[in-house]
Image (cartoon, rainbow, N blue to C red; front, side, top):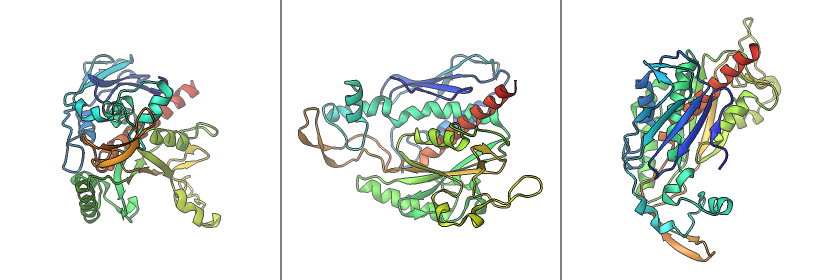
Length: 354
């Protein structure tokens, strides 16, 4: 199976399955001498962790990470950083009913078509539990790229949308509610909708917005490796993601060029930032901001019609512990992938100047 490694200069390879012994990763390319803040890593893991509130999956995993290489006396050594997060609360019997059938809009069918064999327990390698390894690596990348800061938050759940732009919000308030929306009133509406959908045995989608501040100028390349293209690749690699837009995004098509162009200040900054901090594929020093759209989780806790391995139509009753809406836990994943992209771009710039 290919495609388990992300990045060029700062590389992450992940391994493990949802119901295997554990999940982990190997980070290659992290410079020596970085003082590692373990508390930050554990804090980000807790933000992604299942069972953290009543509106997410109730699988109880402590998600404690153990490092086996690459860190000595609290600092990176420059060698590959190997780590593991053990699975402790698998209920594989919850998936025995789909051993011979396929869940709609899931990876079950395509896995069988590609590999001729699949781990049906929680989706195996295609499970969103794989992202726990990304959060560990992203937390280390965040420390490497300081003073660059990355802040994600939930801006939409279903039809409930946060209308204020990020620069009118106190984004630090996102961690004060289980939805991770920085506006308390909107957060209450989002939480109520998620609870209602959960009672129905159904799911709902949403949007995670993210802001990257203090970005140095000159990250990214002008052709295939545009910085926004790298960010798009990173975000679209996350489970359940259906869309990515940065800067003015799709709303930009309603504007005329004269209004959309970002006029310069004398110091090279711009009076507006419809470009979203990236021009010609290269960062210009302004804030990078983007939205990531997540579909409703495909696994439903209700009966549904599908087919089995023989192509026969069957009715299956959904089981297991699943998120009614993935976006509250996805905030930490979006931040992690953004940090991996920025760390990789910074290290590639250093290599280019040698």
